[in-house]
Length: 58
Picture 1 (cartoon, rainbow, N blue to C red):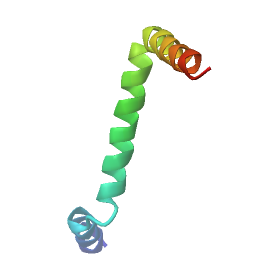
Picture 2: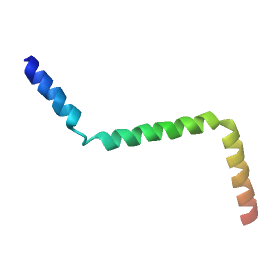
Picture 3: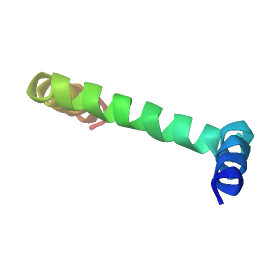
Picture 4: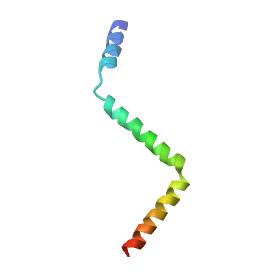
């Protein structure tokens, strides 16, 4: 039983099929956290940029 469990864990350690998806998920979480940390100032600047853009178009 222990040998089967050990072999299974070794197999999982070598298997990298889902690794890319996990890396993208972690990267996405970092980007969301960075945007959240910038927070209000980012929102204010983005609103100002879009307001200026729409005023130019009109």
